[in-house]
Length: 247
Image (cartoon, rainbow, N blue to C red; front, side, top):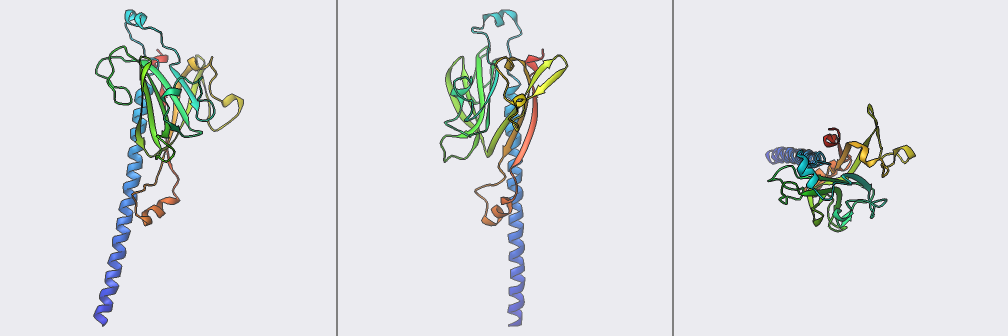
């Protein structure tokens, strides 16, 4: 009886150690996946946002483009002003996330063999629009970072890029003089911090992007999920310089 009692005591300890180790492993794996999702989202966003307002270096090619690029950088707040006045309305997901931001860029393809943000092949000097936002195919879908793309004004394709992205916010840096920039601020409703006006969009030269990535995972065990419940979603920020507007 004593041996059985000792054995049960040791077995209970071993089971507890296994559960703790497994929970720690699952938690670390989810946090690693969160960081990986954020890195991928940031990489995709910066890659295509930097192309905004790109036009061919060759003057003859530039003159041949018709029509010329307009609305090459624009943004909106979903549920507030993403209507007909927003150039990327047609590229939004079916169910965009209310109060998140959408950002639209337009560029010409610099060389052959490239793909748009949805993975579709494009040719040199094609005019591409790309709109990034957060949403889902329907209200029950998990949130994801979406890209909607159109080539030469037609064939709109919308596709999820990475799941687990819970929000997107964009601040716009507007050049107010040769030596100063004014940032809009999505955290404030003050008159000085609203979205740029129609006259200000051409002066936007910097985008400050804030991506929120969910920390939880529906594949976790209940114990691991409970440990993550009190953890806030992770926020990642980067600044993208629109070099084509600075040249």
